[in-house]
Length: 376
Image 1: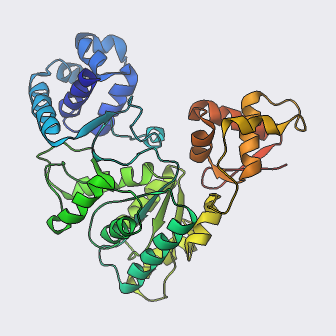
Image 2: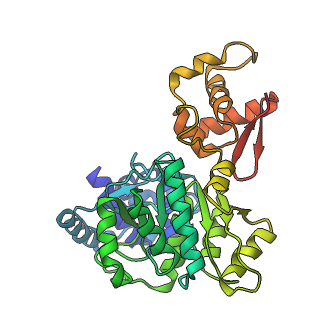
Image 3: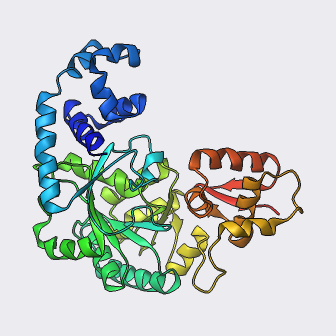
């Protein structure tokens, strides 16, 4: 595993930080180490590889030296590197067409927790926005005790979401637009230190990477892709939170927004998104939980493998795995694909095929936001 991490780091440097190209190469070969070992036969492996790319892939010297430095820093500061093939890599992200081939992580939280919510919005949050986040997280904690809260550690909505999560005992992960050798904004360093012990810090960037503007846009796709849903709290007509919401839509994630007063600058983005059917309207945690189809502490216990046997034979011509899915939806209907794969343990590729067969049999129907509804 260390060798694969080493070569994956080097690959990000070798492609001159063209992360899309690095991902295409990684997926084409299946391993950064294999890519290195066959660097002189790239044209045979990737038929449409350009002469420029084939030439670039022959010289790994500088990228490997940089990877060695990074691995030393990681060892000294207890940082983990997660490649696409790592079980601890955020599996929801692997579904995204522009997933990072490597992530650097310092923390304790499970990045594949059953329920993950990203809260995003303006850096110029109002008192109204603060109150929304405070009430939402407090109520969500009472109803759904096990949720991972994700945001970007920036001013405004981000830092408020992290701090409220910490205050209410939720793990919270900050996705950074720079390496783990710094914290930006600097004044958030104390909160970041708490998060390492009650959540974590995550980035796709090596150390010595500054918090430049393009990195924040790249960071947003991780905030969107690693979660089940994205909630826009407050936003002007244009802003990073809206960009994250749009990315989440493209990933088939559930998107929600809190409405605000007409004419208020930092409610305009949310109101417009709701008006244009880009987000579901929520006013509290109960609305959100109902829309997501999540069970609460008052509901039935979580689905277990043994409960699949309770489906019986009232639905004919179902395979054991199809019965397993139906049993889950009988207990809690209208669940997202991500939730179904986590609770059943069926890999997402096979699960997609199963749900399609169930749709053909008239057993389930797909809903907006990647959700599935049991028709029986």
